[in-house]
Image (cartoon, rainbow, N blue to C red):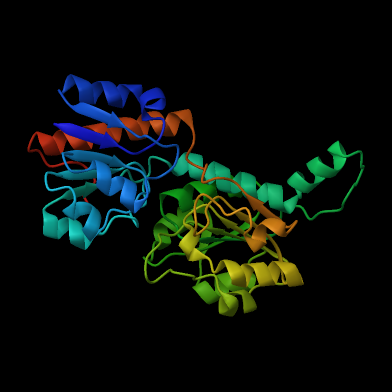
Length: 316
């Protein structure tokens, strides 16, 4: 039984999971890259694969057709927008993910990005290192409104972190969760209300056809002048050119992104030229704790499927 692991650093950061697979008798092929495989690269190596612990490579009809023996794709993370679930169902491939396991890591990173935007920490670091001494004035978070788009595992963890700053918390969630929201001190609002009322907005909602480019020229027009936006979810949620225009004009105060539509990021992207844009390389889940736990969950899912058992967190 051959397991392809496209998730990077699995051998160094997921040693318990790797040991489980080898003890089960799996032949393990580790990722050859420090990034997701391209479509072509993936199709070249999956012909004899029984299972895949998947990063963000495109698992679509073509990829699955090139892997006739594939039985399971265990997504190394929560999101599964790079896996065509309908195609997987047609090919008889089970797909699993790891919901909630990365919530602490991603929520902490989103909070860090918000604080870096609010206090312009990257810019002040650069100017101070260059010999400057800019003592800029800022607003405190206390008393301001933080809007959370998506009150799932990550959104709820982010709300708990933000509550310590004395902010007003609002959230939009497609599934009405009044009791959960009240327990967190969060006021559920419509999406338009969230756009219009928030001083700071954090995206933590799943990427799909309904949420594609939900931050666009129309939604930006409803936001407060100077709003700060954080995206540690998926790049496809944001129309990047619309945000670029709003940042350049001063309509938006700042944008911090751990994700963009194209990854790795293009150094020539217009956003990269703006001082009120902060980016990190899809690093929100890069914690030792997250890797260890996700490694164990994905290894167990693979072993369960190869043993004929029902895996946890099965999507199809």
